[in-house]
Length: 155
Image (cartoon, rainbow, N blue to C red; front, side, top):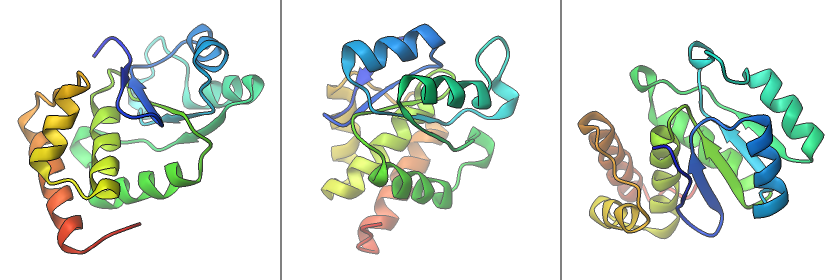
């Protein structure tokens, strides 16, 4: 995913932003917070999580870093994400390296908040231009949504 996707009034998702992109998100779009889901192994030429946090602070953006890798995704990480985004000023820019994990985490959050079935979640995501094209990610989303609907979760 190379472009931003607006998944709700409160959430914009995409890939790793530069300092300039963070400034544009704040000044032109009105973002209030940034959530970074990249792991330390994904740094390459991008801002490190510490550098990104410093840039966000300088711009007046709240910042939360929750490293998530495809290999280590867990329901606990999604719950941690959900608890934190509920307390951050909105709108929130959520990103990882490409935007795929970011979109998945936001859609899981929205599904539980709005009591959507997994099918409704996938349909709504596609309507917003976000398609989960990784079978393992799609299976994880479905399992998380179904488990949290059964549990009546409202983290």
